[in-house]
Length: 185
Image (cartoon, rainbow, N blue to C red; front, side):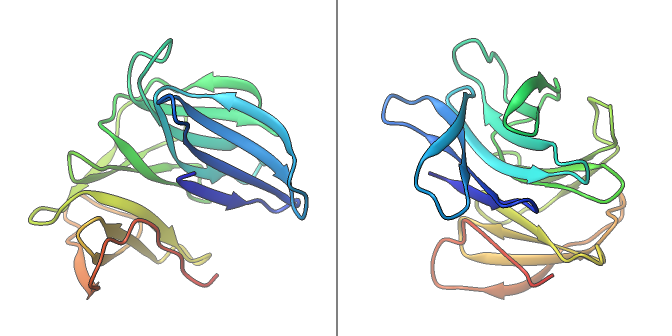
């Protein structure tokens, strides 16, 4: 398991990679240790997020029938998978803002991309140089600040919405890898 998300209706989703190098996302009913839905996605499934309509988005790395790294969208119950077709490099953290913009970390490229609803091209890209791989994303309900963690142990903050002139600020340096990040609502 790599990422987990509890949705607003009492379901828990977990993404990751199995021992055979296959990506997956599974769904559980909160409080029960039984998978109720499962989908395979590339060689690794990473960041997961939910939009205001209850659709689930999963960042994945290419592999098998999934030729390129991208993002998949599912309707509730992990049904009706739709591959969104963005070309991204090693996606990790993922968010969907209140306007439906998809925000994704391209770990290897050290950047954060914002994709407006229905587009395959980022409208804004913010690069963070001088650090190791970008990992997780978080944002409060107010959507005023975006937070990103790095494998090298840094946490950055930046005003949201992002613009081409956004400059990330080092918020904190910790003593080990910071794969995930969470903030209070």
